[in-house]
Length: 211
Image (cartoon, rainbow, N blue to C red; front, side):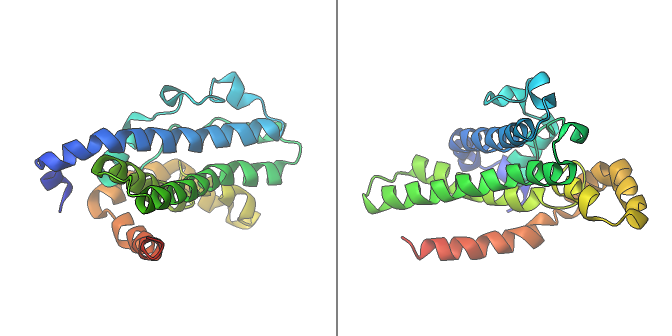
């Protein structure tokens, strides 16, 4: 079903009642994890900009949130960091970049455990099923999607550490045009549905074995 068909489907809007809280929790924890690890690595910048916070309003990016609602792939406002403040610059960048995706994997695992417990106790209902299914899907999607090496995604920060200096022009190109490439390719091809969704579907099939 296309996104335009979804928008005319009453069930889609009903599901949003449970989907939106799952999105807010997932995005907020993701960005808070970036901020927390950056501060622990010695950079006060996230705290200075009010990003060491569990308030969703401090982290939401309007376009990225809309993309999540429509495509189930998106982003929040990147946490500002100054790598020069890190005690160890390269490791600081790596751990700060990985903190968001790793927090989503943790949230996904917690959601799986709660879902299985509720299901086996026969306490599951349609609303809870939608909420925890969304938590599992969105957190897997955020973890995988954000590791792609395209700004403003987390993987782009890893590129600055891993790419050899002689290829630094690639990083400069992505910094300049990566956001446009990301938005354009999402709108034109919705390529995550072809690349990431099959991986998620396989993980969901393993998850179903627990039920």
